[in-house]
Length: 140
Image (cartoon, rainbow, N blue to C red; front, top):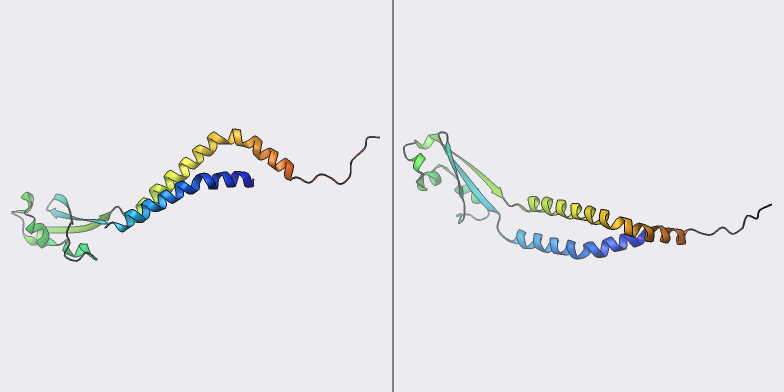
């Protein structure tokens, strides 16, 4: 059984390092925040590309932001009728879930393809690992 684990480890080590490198690179980039401006029943989503406070970009998502953006369906609306929602996409958690799913699924597919070939080597290794009896049974 150790041969199978060793093979899987040697196969997945480069893949795991590539995924971790991708995650560390993507986590270094800024998470994109969006502001959803809702005027009556109409809405639009606006990316917050240059927030005034980068540590909390959702502070910029307010009624005045939507009015300053001069949306065509918000021109004749009172300020009290405008609602805003701030949200973020491309978080590290989302990327981790997707990469983990791809990693596990590809591993299972590869193991399903390799298992018939590898099973005979695994069985042979297990047979070699079994101790031989210290006595022999002789026929009568």
